Image 1 (cartoon, rainbow, N blue to C red):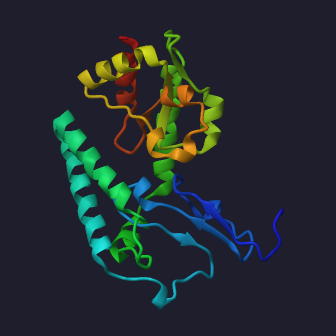
Image 2 (image 1 turned 120 degrees about the vertical axis):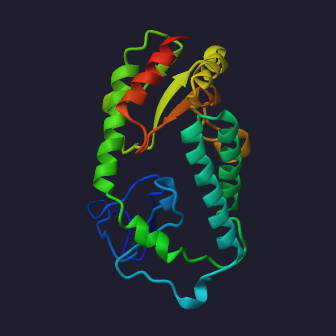
Length: 242
């Protein structure tokens, strides 16, 4: 309502699983962009607009960048599967290297934009978004239920009434004071639990105005289809051991 009809608005929904009810056509120049790889092992993204289509001369359908990303994604997904099977920290660290390579490579090119794979878009369309969202929300609620009981004043969590309506469904955040953070990370790693920091501030100059003490205290636990309520209980019990 603050823009006239000629203003182009692009809504960055890279961390959300978009459904039809979440992408109402606001006006003819309103676009949504998602990111498939944030939700599954497929690559690509959607530009969502009723009348949007790529002009053939504006995109490339196959190039080295696309092949390279697909191969790195395949290696990364394979390593993640092996980590899940063998609970190996060395395999985890190797998978993170491929994740960083893939993350750096995507979008870092001077050529035309690259069309996604037809198979990725087809397979992504088969996912039951409603069921995934309900599962992830249940896991977030389970984290909140357990971690709100923590007595350690050096570890804090956001209240459930802030997290539940936020749309944050991919990780559960906790804030750990610096003096005990390395100790907690080591304790959890000893039990094959691997929380992580979201982003490296040094690699992102535009984040330099953040409250760095607060930001570096932020750790996140993964929330996805393979995380169960028993996993949450186990993580909480191990965290209690600090």
